[in-house]
Image (cartoon, rainbow, N blue to C red):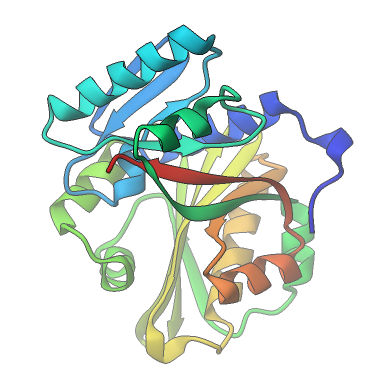
Length: 256
């Protein structure tokens, strides 16, 4: 379900996406006239994508794309661009397609009130703890689901500057689901939701999400946002039940 158009503006969407970029901090970042060029070797690929928020005319747009390509080529990486209709320069998607960039990974950006998420889950089937810093138990579950280079994952979390809460749900003595929330100026972003395969369908993700919402409320963050890929149907169903509504869609373009 989409949010009311009157409640959503390009400025709001840009603000949320920039909060998300700060909550997934890349190792190298250059700001070029409103565009964020981000590189994060060994991290998940979306941490190192271009966030193209600055306006640009036709000739200027091509120049900025070439500048981004040079940024990544100098680091031995492939350029990837996050494209949000109505927020990015209007001709960007067509320009990238014409340069051979492949479209992939459609994503939904969604929002909810913290109170709504808390009210939705009045009971928690699992024991949930929320820490201000990642523990080894939290990281082990997150890494087991997401993979990647462990040291790069720890390094990314160490670069975070905003207050964070790290939730872990346990069945007995085993941590089976985790998630984290990042607070930034009244907003709380949910990231890193992960449940071990053997615990799925048992309410662990719901318990983690509710605990993150409570933690956000305690830090005066009354609104929550998250990003979820369209092929992740279980997560989409969970967030819809929790009261999240879509404010925009976006996708990525990857250089061929």
